[in-house]
Length: 143
Image (cartoon, rainbow, N blue to C red; front, side, top):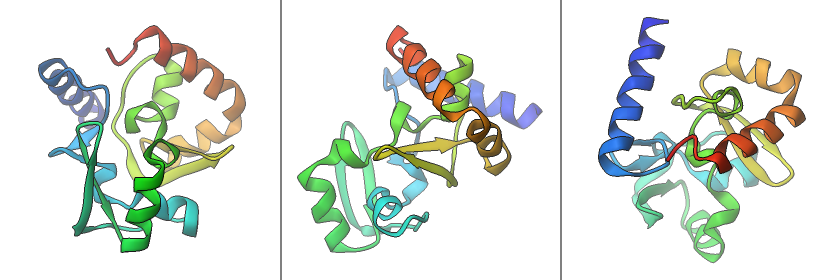
């Protein structure tokens, strides 16, 4: 629990300094995982640093050139919801980091969670949590 609190404090502090409303690790989104692979392969696949692009002040890595091409055609389709912060956490009114393997695709959108255990909690009441998370995000939870 202490590690979670420390991680949230670090994330919040870095957001205040940069003004960004997305979870990044050294400027890289999704810890370097390929955002398109979630949709094309339904699994978390690490991207390749040599196949990358910038979008909304974040660097995205891809596992293939084809995935990069798909992303460039419509980046908003592939980026994670809530700036890559934990969807469960946003539904609870706070920002938490995420693990790339703890993901869910719902209605063509990518949602990430803190870990697989939190993903289980998220999945129990997913539709209501999406509504609450969207409300919190719009209110400026990350701003």
